[in-house]
Image 1: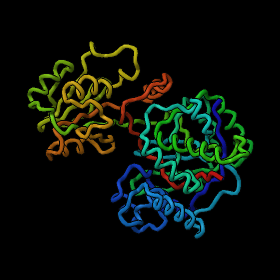
Image 2 (image 1 turned 90 degrees about the horizontal axis):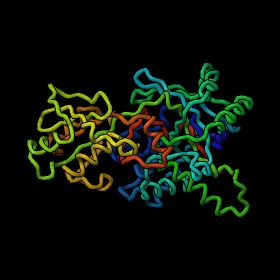
Image 3 (image 1 turned 180 degrees about the vertical axis):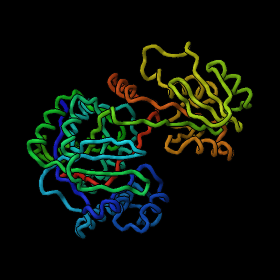
Image 4 (image 1 turned 120 degrees about the vertical axis):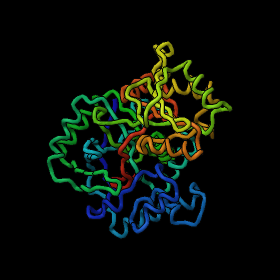
Length: 411
């Protein structure tokens, strides 16, 4: 049985919410983080990317994690952030291009992660997982939420009375995304939510596999150090925001390959025609349906559709567009055996647009670009239900959840 829990959030003063909150730690490099935090002494990047305040150093060093802890304590000491007096739930709305999505902010049990009631669809990298684990243990806090989704069975309806009230935060971030937060502290409402979400057989990690793994591992580390561990301690949970799947949108995750594996453009297109129907396009275009991708090569755009005889009939992973591309084109034609480790391939989230793909090919940095049709949420959940793992870089969710608005303390 899946369970949710209210918590005493560590959160910014309302007038400082826009300055404090930041994009997730892993969507920018150090130079970009420095620029984003410039002129913002209370930016949460000073906690999640504490290395930006230190001389060039290993971002995974003990010094960085300790500095993150000091910055978090400093913000609390100066009254920039404060802890809620009682455990609460929250509703978090994001608005992007006129589209809204509403999530319930709660803590979920690490035990549910280990037992599979919180389902994953991606593998994690050991170094990234270890980084977040050390950050959590050093700061004694989960500074950013895990992005969960679920098949709505009436849970969202229970949030509607709350979102008619006055929010505690409501601002538009520098990237144009709207962020609104409401507080739920009524015991009757919270109990209804607990009961309703307990009826869900499971939830799914949409984004934040490393945060989930690190949060669950932190709970295990703390439990092992506590001789009186009972299983209901605050550290036994991690922070999440749960969105109904019907409100979410997955963007395309595109591919760039640096060379044609010794082939000429003509030879590559000839080989490609054995697995795809190809049509030359008058200009840039995105694919309009599944099993179709658009190709940019030598200044020209092409619409390509996989031939039906290559569609797998049973395996949900092999039937993904990104799997077909890997198995029929990237590996046999371009020699990309392992996209996780190959230095000849790069991945570009659809939020950057087709112009990014075209520019990187035109510059000579890459030889060919593949604009993909987005993976669907049903595909994501079906694969997680089957206990399977998606290929790397299969999904890109927008908008991103902000760090620092609502933080979970482990004790």
